[in-house]
Amino acid sequence: MPALTAAQIVAIASRYTPPDAPCACSALKCAGWESLPATFDASLLRSVGRTNDRDPYDEPTLEEHHPQGTRYDAPDAPIALGHFPYNRCEVWQCVRCARPFLRYTEYGGYYVDQRIRELNAALVVDTAATQD
Ligand SMILES: [Zn+2]
Image (cartoon, rainbow, N blue to C red):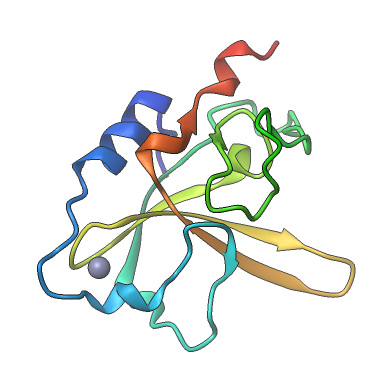
């Protein structure tokens, strides 16, 4: 799976135009991070790349980036590519309307949770470029 640059990620998100008729992917309401519903048809999405081009042996930071005081699951939280969890995501698109999403797997103590968030170009911040 190719590593995408911030510019490529913004380009994918910017190309999306909502279809006139509601698409099957409209079942996903995920302006902020949500658990992928177990009932959602996973074949509606295809992966197009990943957000992280760092050394795979270099553990990405768990720090979050919220300069405006947002929270992890806020719909207006920045998509900070150098910060958690955007530094470990895959970029997916709806196979029908090309609506873009970010996905990653949250590993809790006793659970594994698939998280998904719509990829909104206006919220992307390339904080990776300013890190070490
Ligand atoms: Zn769709």
